[in-house]
Image (tube, rainbow, N blue to C red; front, side, top):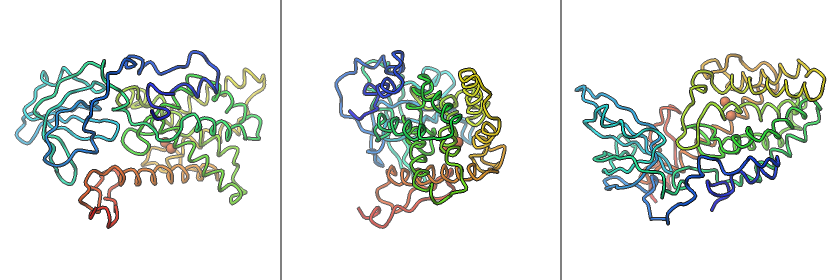
Length: 363
Ligand SMILES: [Fe+2]
Ligand SMILES: [Fe+2]
């Protein structure tokens, strides 16, 4: 079993790090401990055009849509640990899609079809399945990196901060068992980059490592602030999304977004530090940290209410973007199920298709 998989070592590194007995395997997985013996399943990344499918998937999303003739069809987003595929079922009603909801396991029957460069399943049957007897590790994509080691590295880098107020602030975050449990489990996104359990931690540690390597090249950047900003920038994602079963935006996430949520979390921890230390937290540092959180998307159209206006904020924006985009490109190429093409299908998110290389289409 991979480290960090549900039922595996989630929680263990946190026990080691923060010594809190409340932390254990996330409740979400506790009901799966009596998993049945493994049956061979067809994973999403093994499906091919024209194939008949009878398989259980995690329903990530369901939408009842109307076609041109105003008759309703189901668009189901089906996932397992290898990826997601759309399932379409014609002639549906409100009542016929009511028995299953996002987060449920569903058994489907249908036929795989290549449509506009991507595979989808035309469904003839869909029914909800009880959780027991289902191995959740088949359905939740998990970081391939070692969660324990990533948490240790995160701690090591953040505790190397030499400015005492920022260091104390980081210590209070690292000592918060609830925050750190969620931080180790959360994905960095739902569909974009690092969209798997542990993805947020992997993303943040990778940016911290990049910052470590460029520090001596940018003497005008305050790397104490930058390291803290890297840790904080996407911290709000632990409340912006739910990720116990299917990944989805929470109401708080939809209404506030992870920038505003992170700001609230930072304010709460600054209040805690002020209480513990008995002295006010320097306003200048607080403002610079908040500015990094609010501006890290780099542009108004990407959800930042402020453009980066400090060397640390612009550095954070570019380091964040570098890690997110390179990861998304590499993952899209790696996970593309269409072995016969040198190109991935057009991605509306990226507004382009990606070149997989000559060997991809001929292999
Ligand atoms: Fe972000
Ligand atoms: Fe990020």
